[in-house]
Image 1 (cartoon, helix red, strand yellow):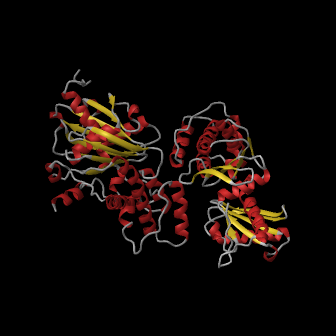
Image 2: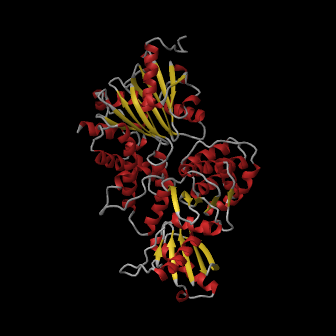
Image 3: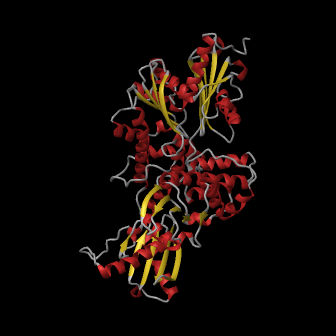
Amino acid sequence: MIVAGIDVGGKNVHIVIKKDGQILGKGTSPTGIKKAEAVSALYEQVLKQAGLTRKDVERVVATGSAAKRVAFANGSISDVAADARGAIKLFPNARTVIDVGAEEGRSIKVSPEGKVLDFAINDKCAAGTGTFLEAMSRALEVSVEEMSKIAFDSTKAIPMNAQCAVFGESEVVSLIHQNTSKPDISRAVMDAIAGRVGAIARIVGLEKDVVVVGGMAKNAGFVDSLKKNIEMPVTVPEDPDYIGAIGAADAALSSILEEEVNPVRNSSGALFLTG
Amino acid sequence: MLKEKAFQKGKPIKEKETMAQKGKPVEFWRWPESNWVNPDIDWKKGKFITAGVDVGSVSTQAVVMVDGEFFAFGNTRTGSDSPNSARNGMDYMLQKTDMKLENMDYCIGTGYGRVNVPMAQQAITEISCHARGANFMYGPEVRTVMDMGGQDCKVISVDGLGKVLNFMMNDKCAAGTGRGMEVFADLIRVPVWDIGPRSFQIKKQPPPISSTCVVFAKSEVVGLLEQGVSENEIMAAYCSAMAHRIMELLNRLGVKEKFVITGGIAKNEGVVKRLEKELGVKTAERVWYKKEYIERGYPFDTQLAGAIGAALFGNALLKMGKAKSPRKA
């Protein structure tokens, strides 16, 4: 059985095509303004790369903030559920999944079966998201990747007072004027984001093992700050930004399996997917 | 109408013209600076000459009061450090007068950078100063003052003497602040003072914009522009979002009339009118409480409340003998 998972996030689309648990193809591209077109283009590209056509894919499940924009999907699941499923798939011992994306940060408590037990989301404010880091990187004139690296060279802990990304930019500028070193500023920015994310994680409670996913998990500097903030070791998967898509693909697969036992479809033929 | 005329006449600079005349409307957030001196007062005859310098995160105002009467002001942008910004504001005001810094009896710093005002003998919080200043500007009936500044937003309940009874502030988030409006002006490439009037020139109800984060609102605006939504509608949507955001703060403290708004956002009709509608309470007319000030056409600038309050505190301290003028010592 070939299934696809599509995660349409605030900044990037991620697509995974799987056959019986094995990944046939995957790809990512910016979401942009015209989301539906970006998704279609990327889908074609990933299919081609896997040597498939649309007809070969038995079921497509979408997730992410703009999941509804994927017209050709057979169903959708919430991003929280996708994260939980995806993380458990890779790490059966995961109990807390922290997902830090471009526009959202969330912490999810998961059961060993990959069910969502509890979660907390910050989706109102850019503090504690990838967007915050990008804004600071512009102000500092150092790339996000570079900031991640040089944060480890920091020699002095500097607190950032601003919570808001708009005020954060002015604060970074004034830190530059005070001749604060770029590594120290980078570390301060990472600590600020980690502080915000840690606060969300503590709302639902932290339980081992902690898995960090989402685009920000690729940022070693941030992961290091987060580890110190929550005072716990964390695990980062190989492709942390694909977890949502993997979870969606997994949901597609299990929905087919479930359906063989108990078919549930609504009048329009779309699937009701839960959890 | 006398009041209306007075306000027009007193307007410090014909704002729209300055930008067009200079022919380089590049920075849409950059509102024009202004200064003014009262032609009816001879400061040399004054007993107590007091100054207030309000160094905010975005703007700096210097005001001089002669025996508690409004004498001169300078309204400038805050630079990268507070001491220089305070000096700039002061110098810009003094340009209009034949007064020197040494002629002043007492100076009080207020605002975000109040502890870094080099010429000040004392610092007082901007909450107290805005309450006092609003009492002077709008009159003793004022009960709720909302200061909508560059980087924070405060609601203050005051008594008939301009004393602070209670207050609440939002200083964590740029939504609902002047800086947020500047960021928006730059993004949509419309001068910041045009946003209010243009937000009413719309044919249909604008789409909603996130009322919380300025950064997210920015990406939403880009999306709306891309979809071909008109600029005016987007401005209407942003003003509504801002008004809605401020409501949260007002609801927590409660609003009593007379209700006034001070600070830069008070000049943005697009936000103020929508806020009044949502709140169901009108804001007081932006004119002087003192009749003679209206008749003489003294400029009324909502951004001056903090500095006026500070200068008035200076005057009160000298009168009560609680402070001494370095000049007369």
